[in-house]
Length: 170
Image (cartoon, rainbow, N blue to C red; front, side, top):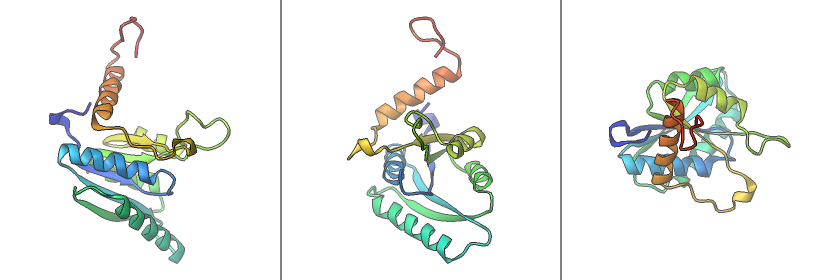
């Protein structure tokens, strides 16, 4: 639950593909503004990366910075690992919140979360927000802090096994 005493100050954004980048940047910077935090844009390169890997990482970092319209501090970081999942999970120990995009695809993907994102969320040492843009979203505006607080409260309630008004769990 997002409260003043549990405010995410160190917010990481796991960069990868560009599909969810605008939404990830918006969610991270909105939360950082609200709670006086900073954003760290993370990208994982293989141990023995080539020019193509490096160029892609640079392009995604530049786009993230261009989309970072907030005055909150940010930095970029390249992690070197042949195991992106392990690298993000390890780095999550130093974060309060990690924002990651979901690349769910296929005909039945509408309400699903991608496998990689789900594995990061299960193993991370901090809270994780998974975002996914869809083509029908158009110029979607990220939810405001109140909506994110409400979501955090709902997730905490479910995690604690509290029931809602009808007496059924979560």
